[in-house]
Image 1 (cartoon, rainbow, N blue to C red):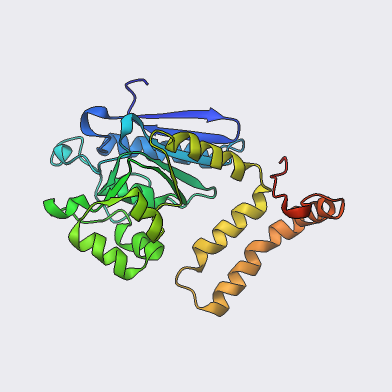
Image 2 (image 1 turned 180 degrees about the vertical axis):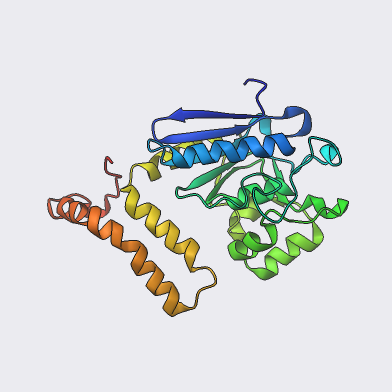
Amino acid sequence: MTDQAVRTEQSGPVTTVFLHRPATRNAVDGPTAAELAAAFRAFDADPGAAVAVLHGAGGVFCSGADLTAIGTERGNRVAPDGDAPMGVSRLRLSKPVIAAVSGYAVAGGLELALWCDLRVADETAVFGVFCRRWGVPLIDGGTVRLPRLIGTSRAMDMILTGRAVDAAEAAAIGLANRVVPAGQALAAAQELAAQLAAFPQVCLRSDRASVLDAEGLDETAALASEFAHGQAALAGETAVGAARFAAGAGRHGNFGTPPR
């Protein structure tokens, strides 16, 4: 591992973005936030990249914003427009991102995990609004995304108490999508990313966009949005997929992912 705070690796269609600031438990200062945003913008613009994985190196996902940088030239950007304090949390990408969580994902680190589409946690993972004790608010989507994922009551419990939520509880309440043995979060997330990347991508991305766009819409508007999102897949991928099915693919519960 290099001394770069943010590093990107490519393995076929899977992009892995590593956060590496071991001296601060991967806390994010202003320059690091800008690097994270740049890395994910580059991923989204890369036609060869399909799914990204975000991982905190060294056994900690992210301990939040770097509070030692407040009031210095390294301080996080705090403005109502443009990039958010943690860099990426206002970005709306066209492709999915998976968080590979080992160790602490707390405060702004929790918000980074919430920004991702899926969360693969190993047994060491701990989630929490630890910034509660320091008077630091959730301004990177925590009060928005957490209730949508786990419900208002459970989210309010986490937000008001600031308590630690381990991997088992995170899975039980829907905060973690997968729990794997200690040390396996990155490999499991990359494997899952490769599985997603093998599906027809127009359809996968349009269904993802429909889910995100449906937030806040009434049922009629949400159904219309879903139908509109599906048109590109119907025009470009459905006939090919239907022909594969008619030729015998996918029988007897075989859900093997096709080549793209």
